[in-house]
Structures are given as C-alpha cells and as structure tokens.
Image (tube, rainbow, N blue to C red; front, side, top):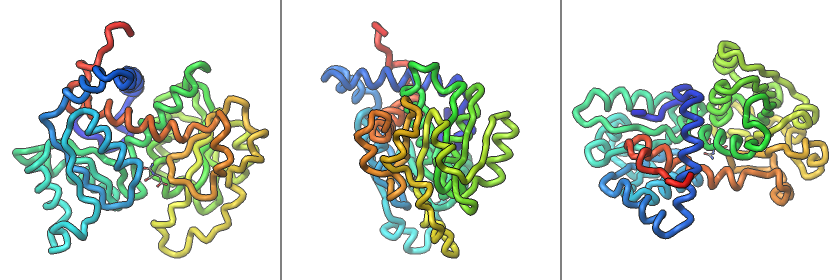
Length: 324
Ligand code: NCD
C-alpha cells in the first residue's frame, strides 16, 4: 500500500486482514510492555497533519495513532496561517511538507486534491505517502475502514457483514462517509443497502453506477420507518450544510431523525452507527441502548488508523501476538 486515497482501492482480503491486525494491535494496549513496544515501531518517522477543514475525531485519532507508534506529528489546521496566505499554491505547500516529513495526512474541502498531490509527489525525488482524511463531499476512506471494522466486530456472532441489510440515512448526496462506506460494502456477499433520505439528498449517479456494476443490491426510499425496521445496521448522518450553494439544507428533515421512541421498532440486535458529529438526527437518549455503537466506532477509528499506519510503513508484520 503506497497511499490511502479512495475506498475503491481496498478488496475483501485487505479488509479481513485489517480487521485481524487492528484487533491484534488493540491487545497491545492492555499492558505497559505492549504500549511501549508499539511506540518503538516508528520513532524514526515524522508525519504532517494538514487539516484545512474542521475536524475533531479524525484529526485527534490520527494524531493519537501517530503517538501510539512513536511517530512525531506536526500540524497545519488553517491554510490562513501558512504561505497559502501569501499566494502559494496548495500543491507547492504540500510539496514543501514532503521535504520535512515521511507521511502527509490531509483533509481538505477540495475533491480530488489528494489524488493530484499523490501523483505530483510520486514524480519528485522525495515521494511520501498521502492519506486522504476527507476530501470535500467526495471520499473519506479511513472513516469507511473504521466503519467496516465496527460493523464486522458488532456482527461477528451473526456471520459478519455478508448477507446483512445496512440502512444509510441522511444527506446521502454530499456525505462522503456514506459514499466511501457504500463502496467498501461492495466487497461483501449478498449485502443490501437501503438509502433513506428526502428526495433532494439522494445518492449521486456515480455511486448508483458503482453499486450496479459491483452487483450490490440497493434501494432508495423516502420512507424512514420501514427502512430502519428491516435493517441489521443503521448508519445515521447529519446534513452537510457546509456545501450548500442555495439553501438546500432548508428541507424539513425531522422525519428522518432517529428518536428513542423508534428503538422498539428496530431489530433487537440492530447496530446503530453514526460517523459523528451528530445534531438532532440522533437522540442522545439512544446512547444508553446497547445497540448504540457510535462511541465505540469513534474509538475503533484510532486503532484502525494505527493499523493503517503500520501497513504504510511496512511494520505490520512486527505486530504479532504469539498466543493468538
Ligand atoms: C465526518 C466527516 O468529516 O465527513 N466526520 C468524521 O470524520 N467523523 C462526518 C460529518 O462531518 O458529518
């Protein structure tokens, strides 16, 4: 693995391996020796976190993942504090980072920027891996990896993700997590995706085509209740109003809110997920329900990112527990 740019670069074998690797890495966290060992894996590496779009979880979990592996992390969180303010192109800024660090983890509002930068750096004498931590409304591949990890773990006693119905709710048009996760779900057998949203937040054509090409069954509906009632997992998302160009988010979305009163209509082992941050679409009352997995999902994100970093630097084979 050279870069992490899009969820379409991953196959089932990769996803199964990542699940095993992440589960093994988490076990190292249980002892002082294990934690010190993880920190000894990459102390000679430096990473740049270039996040010019707001982030809490993705930023902190990547930064923590770096710390866990001993990687020194630097950051830019606002292009206005960099030479971009002086008119430097974003490409030149990123090339500059590659002079100082061994890895660039980036989030930006510009779809396709990560791919452009990866191609540009690959042609320089100092190519460094690029990790896409969110590229506009386009992709969020590491979120999709942690979502798959959480689904696999939550469904492990029920045969895993194969054969399950996953219901995605919300702004399916501009939600990059939905787009990246849907693409990863095509790697599983006999999965059905139900996309539940108001008419103006339906998925885009490119995703429809990708699912059809992969032979993944999907359904689009604006009826919330029947969709959530038949689901083995529900993936709630917020309205992405930062991408509004003409008041699209003014739509009344309340009938797509998951409320505590809906809990009795869900399957008794339904997995409730949300990439977070949430707004009113997910009632905090639901946090107490054992089916709510979003806080675990958030923590899983850090461990999945540790696993991805070990693979990028080719030290994943050094993460083995003899008694597994
Ligand atoms: C998501 C994102 O940034 O796309 N958040 C995250 O990374 N956990 C979802 C969102 O912002 O709605």
